[in-house]
Amino acid sequence: MKKIIFALLISFLATPAYASDEVEDINFDYFIVPTEYQIKLVGMYMRIQDHFHKYEVDPKLNIHYGPSFDSPVVQSINENYKHSSSFFGIKNTTLVYFNEKETNWYESRMSSLEGWYNDAWLKNNCVVNTKSTCGFASARAPHPHYYHMIGSDNKSASNWMKWIAHHETVHGFQKELGLMKDNLKMNCWILEGQANALSLASFIENNEIEEIRDGQIKNTLNIIPDLFKMSNSDFVRTFKNIENDRMSCLQKGVGYYIGMMIIEYMYIKYDVQVVHEMLLSIANGNSFDGASRAYFKVSQDDLYSNAFNYIVESLKQIP
Ligand SMILES: [Zn+2]
Image 1 (cartoon, helix red, strand yellow):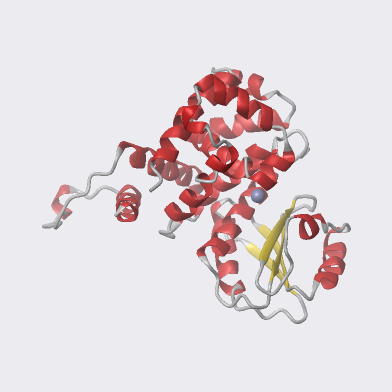
Image 2: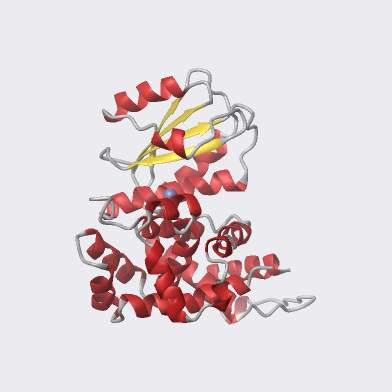
């Protein structure tokens, strides 16, 4: 039922209002009233869509396949890359696909494309076998390069795999916006949180996004099991203790889960462009607190405290 409400709300908010003489007899068997929370969340996705609409491009995808790579899933993943690249205004994208037997080919192809080679993601964050899939976005080249290891037993693209294309494309957008100028200045949770939040807005036509989002944020309680017992100041203190830890961000998921909800809160509360300017000011060397005070007129602590209320509200919505 919850999924139906969400899908209806998306189609309602995405459709321009009809002139009254166009309204014909609409006979709903029942009328579902969306909750305030659902209106807030879907409204945020729509404002993000409006913002990016003006940047839409016809993207060019340069695609490289490993010599024995023949997984049929790439067709659908490529289509999603095309859609997300258009959505985020990325004109030029390079995609490299290889299977579990082609890690050496990947090494030489990445070296020839970019003049450097990274295998840390394969070694540390990926189990390379016939069933697994892993991806990596490289921000060093002039345009985004994405690398995907897709095990040869993967025969159909799951929604998860399609959504990853959107998530990775947000990293491309972050690079083009200037957030990746010096990766060290930009906190990992901001980049991963924004990648999760914005990717759901570009993937919204897929009506599974609610499941994907619920599946992500429910992991928050694995990171902070006492979350529901915390006061706002407990949360601010706890989050500030873990927010700079890159391992917590990537491996425990602080960036993907808590980061996403804090970034969502920012997009709900503030104008999309103002959020981007605030983040850009951090990438250019401002502190989070300084940027928050300058663009949002609240301190970092107050922003986290307000976001905590949204996090609690969000987690209580999960079935
Ligand atoms: Zn990411």
